[in-house]
Image 1 (cartoon, rainbow, N blue to C red):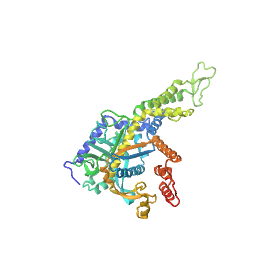
Image 2 (cartoon, rainbow, N blue to C red):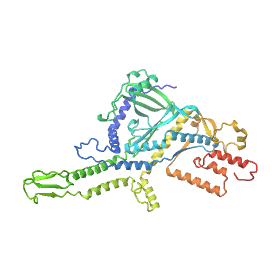
Image 3 (cartoon, rainbow, N blue to C red):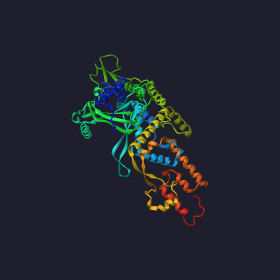
Length: 533
């Protein structure tokens, strides 16, 4: 492993971390995130002295936020790689692309990417930014009895620092800081295993990113991971430290890309931190809560009828609820009289409904989009729902770009860490059928009829790939339309059953490869005649 001439020190990394905290404080990031998180979960009277008065919470912001996030994200996410050079050596390149696509499917399932994307966009909508960090887990089980897997996790935006605060592009950063909090005893053990001479000096510390009331003073220690690109090697390097102690000196990650993705909900010029969707809506939520609180106070004090009675004739009268009021003499119409309750202005309820409806409409969460409208005209409702989703189209495209960037990071990890691994290969169309029948059991075939062959993933460094994300209903519709087209071609006799089965998606036909083998065996058997295949 090559050594650096001027590697970062624990002191220099900690100064960069303090500059990150200073910048976050200058834009009030931590306070904004804390307030937004409180309003999202329903703690909307945090820090307000109520003095026994009602503190109602009608959290329509959460419904609007979750609706917007759900409309942008999709459970059907597929990332597909195609080689840039599809002319020379197309067969080898396409087989490499098939291997990469199979790995994408496995990684998306291993990391539960649809749920990860929902959390990713939820953080962007509530906090202003969303970030993921990808790392290599050397102990995770892998296919073929091997070890090592790629793991992706969502990181809060307050725990990521960019070297250039005015640039939100990840790969152009001079360095990136990733902060985490670890249990001190576990960190000492890990530091000792890494060969840190000062592991006994590691101490718990507070989390400086929060105000005093929110500081975490438990037995945890702040750990900073610094990532940067070294020009001499052309790869990403890293070092790890806590306050004053270098836990792990600089080492080469063997990657060409920073393993970080970043998304801003709304961009802010000359800042890598964005604006949260929730920030501009909080005043509307406060307004509604205050109107409800004042209406409740009014109803609690004046909504019930009160009895006024003559104390000179009735010494005491108290039957609860509105409570009786005693007066000395005066005309109370005999002995007592009932005072009518005060009327609450109907404008209050109108303004509450108007504020909520306008807030939701401006975000595309109309009654039609939320499913509150009566489905009298299906076509009109679909058209209105599509129109309501238009304001979020730019955010959706930013999300797709982030997932494609994550795919490029996965590709970088495959080339740098996978080495030689066994992969499945479909021999149909590539190997002559007679050769397959002649080889028989000599070929390394699995139960699904796929050939198991070794593949050197480091060769992906020499194969430029184009990545394209397919997500949502459009991908589902194109897949269904393709299957319908194949059905029509088969029914019209334009293609044979084998051609049909080779092109139909796997989930449409159970044991598709086994069925292809059975059909080929039947067609090529005695008396097959001229049946089309």
